[in-house]
Length: 118
Image (tube, rainbow, N blue to C red; front, side, top):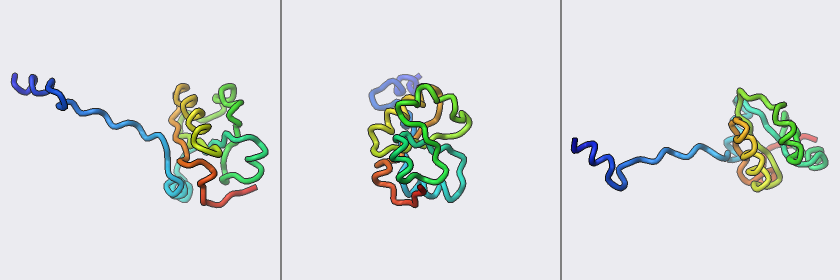
């Protein structure tokens, strides 16, 4: 009985760890090298994408994402790529609301130090 009382004392209940929301560039590079199953989703505009993107990335501009979410595989994680975090965070929230697992490249493409293709 005393154990049940203790479980209700302040601080006795542990909070669940928050799910991962973003990924560092170095970790993403490792995942790419390891060929981890994921979708790299670039939500920038077509012009920015053509100037340079991560090899294998799928382009769905942010303004088209809601209408085109059905094109994404639901059985793998989506890593959202944008110029900066703010746009990517909005896109990731939309994807999560649709039931997809979505992470944001921390710092965006501005901070990406890996190779880009044109």
